[in-house]
Image (cartoon, rainbow, N blue to C red; front, side):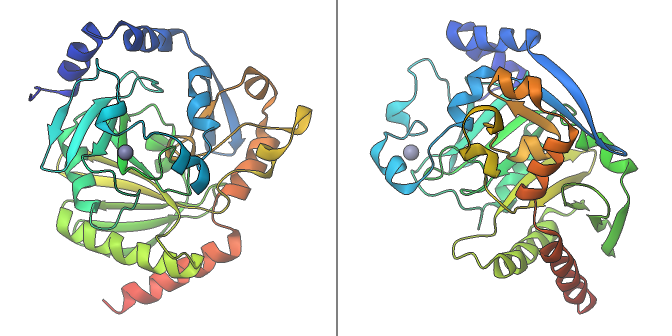
Length: 316
Ligand SMILES: [Zn+2]
């Protein structure tokens, strides 16, 4: 069935699914605290124990092969409603929310998490799901189901970066009519910001950027990235985070040294999800800078990436 808006869909779903409703209501009491990472760059920590399922997900091939896919229709809870989108997607309410509006958009078919051929879908979803920011986590960059294609969408403006980027120093790599591509200049996590009012041109340029990054990262399947997309007024704004490590080295450590953090789009957007209270309590700016410096594209590669892009754009 079709729904009028995200709010309408969410209300219908939660009126029929008490367990999910309780978790959404629980979000109102969720603990958060702000950390000043460095000048002008802030993170908000969110203590969200329900997310342990995602943070601690085993995403190696043997573990994935052993488990039943929780995004396939046969394994979904019977209460879960479907909001169809285009010919290939089901929009679902995420029953383990981070945001007051939190959706998972899954492909109908059980196919791997790869963005190629779906950038246009992502842009149209961002336009369709008003009030939300759509995000994509690469298979090796925090997706908890690397074997079943999915996007997510969450209430806009809860990730600090969505406003904060305006105060960050940025370097313009390319500008043409409404198309603007900038690179962060002095932030702990490196990112590109892309803006345009033409979805086809934006799709094309992003595709080229991802091809360059994939070569640089020497990846067989796709560039390792997290990506945020939002549509406002007449244009889209995207944040692309090229990745280093999948998880920080502290992930594998036990005891005091350990940190159960698996950063993905939302964390790079500045809303840092802690599934364990001990991590939430002890995390400070130096630790978070260390985690981000491991998980963002290393400085040397970031420099090379920007140079390659500038050279590429100068030939357009
Ligand atoms: Zn599946």
